[in-house]
Image (cartoon, rainbow, N blue to C red):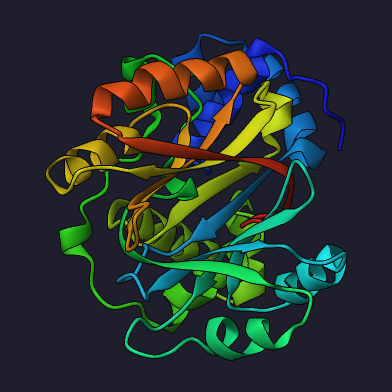
Length: 311
């Protein structure tokens, strides 16, 4: 994919898709103040490769995860990276900018010894240093992140108003619709109806209900380099317990943060950030983090995002 930064109108359209992945051309044009023909053309180009919109279900109760830092790989980093990336329980996998360290998030049951951490990785002679920290709380993840190019009013006008408390259980038709949209959340109702073999009127009605009940969510994936965000970093922090919740919630709403987690261990707060350049990273650390009472900071510059949702 090209690293060329997209134009401002394209960025605003991507932000609109983050608010509502099924936003209509008419609504996007009206809210963003663009010509409908322009919106139709630009969306067609964006969705032809730069951007992917998928349907997801609401985030269930957090199943548990472990954050890993794997160092001193004795020349076997490519083999270890490939083996970890192939595992279904590995959610995220980043290779450091220096090419000497792996950062990963692994699904795990906190009540059990993790076989990957305690048996499989130590048995690999290439790995000599492993740091593992259990995620205690998720303040935000990538599905919550929004490109900061819309006004508050524009974002509110584009966001689907949902009432999750009114949601009932999914039946077979609802499940089939969600499965069809998992690959492409912008499929027309007629296409979905043909796939699930139900009348288009039924599918339209069910789609509207799923959206307003908050059982159909959408997530928009795009290479951050195309957004002008060329610095990808994972930051670990040590925060006094009294400040941890406030710091985590504050970071969750920061426009650069696409993930904020509280963990066990000395580094008890983690943030994943996308920023324009190293100068912006410096200001984030020295200004934004300094205001949160952070006592210690370690920055992992990502050289390659090997495995991420949507990639």
